[in-house]
Structures are given as structure tokens and as C-alpha cells.
Length: 270
Image 1 (tube, helix red, strand yellow):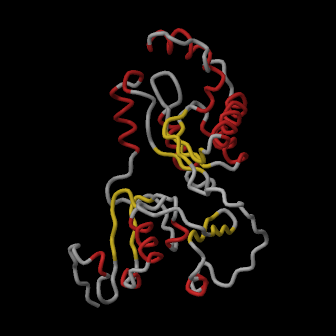
Image 2 (cartoon, helix red, strand yellow):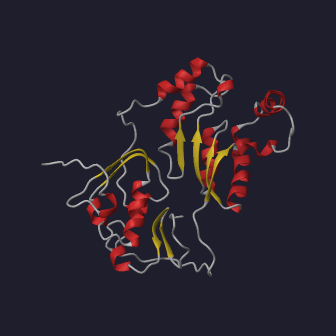
């Protein structure tokens, strides 16, 4: 979904669990010189028969295990719906229940073109099991409140699920301000890494490999190499520069490439 890019006839290359190339396939010699790609022997080719191939949709607000409660208590005020109907049922749900119900939701997501979700629910590990088993991307957020989960569980899941598989991420969070005390919210804030502390792992990736991923910060090395301003170069530069959420540093060995010359530059010697 590159901005202002027309629909084109092209190729998508996948190695293991990563998309390593998307393009028209006309610059194969250059592509194969990428260290992460190199000489490649493909095991399977799929002809899409002229159908449109596009990035999957992302559902940014899901409670996948709540498939059980669909149409269970419609048209009620929020307070009555939650406290009188939903919470009593959820109190009886097991991790295995939520695993199976999440798999049902995943079938619905995939059949609708949704390939990743932002999920909050009661049993993070069984939810991760469901998404891993179905091969679908899931970013979970903490669902702690005054009567469910705990700060200790949120911290444990943050440490465990962020290292579990390429399909899983977990971020700190809470259910809602109306179900969480001030002390609980302060506890969540205290779990957050201090600015500059880091706390994450460092990944060394090419622009091809970084597609679809997000990072707290990114350093782009040798941006001068994108100086040809070809469509492929500009696309890769765009992909790389839009990965970080908070900080982006560009390192140029030589002249700054044309699209970036309006940015402030600091010279580093040594």
C-alpha cells in the first residue's frame, strides 16, 4: 500500500516467515545482491491468476474470546451490559475456553482479509497459543483492572510474550479508566521502561525484512546508497523511515540523498 503507487503486475517473495521482496521483479540482479537475499532457490511458485494481492487489514480493537458473547445482551446501557451480563459470564471462562473461542474469531478475521489484530482479553498465554497455532499476527495489551489479572501478570506477560514468537507482541496497558484505580494506573506507569533505558532487543534487518514491523527506534545506515532515486530505492527508503514509533536516526556516508537534503544534518567525525 505504497502511497500514490498504482496497481502493478509484480512479485512477492517469501522466505520462511518473512516477506523479503515486493516489486515488479525487473531488477533481480540488484535484488539478489542484497546480503539478506543472495542466491535463492525457490521451492514453490503460486500464480495468483491476475487477482489483486495487497497487505492484509488490521483490526485495532478486538476481544477475540468474546465471540461467545456476541448478541448475548444487546441494547443495554454499558454499565448494565458489563456488570450484569458480561462480567458474570467471563468469570466462568477458562483459559481453554478462550483458546477455542479465539480460534473461532481468527477464522472470521482471516476470511475477511484481516491478518493482524490488537487484542485485549483475560488469558494472554492461551490467546497467544491460539494465534500461534493459527499462524496469525497478534499484538496484545494488558487487560488488568480492579478485579481481574494483576500487575505481576502484566509484567510477566510483557517479558514472556515479547520473546515468544515473531507473531506475538505484548504492550503494557489496562482495561479501562472506569474499572482501574489510580493506584493501579500508577503501577502500570511504573512498569514502563524509563526513557533512554532501552529494555528491548536490537534487530539488524534490511528494508525488505522490516516491512510490516514496528520499532521504538531505528537507525538507517548508509542512506546515501539510496541516491539513485529509482522507484525501488524510494520505496525501500520510505519503508525503512516509517518503521520507528519514537526516534529515527539516518547515517550518511557521503552526500545526503536528494529527498533528505532539507533535513537538519550533523557531521560526525572519527
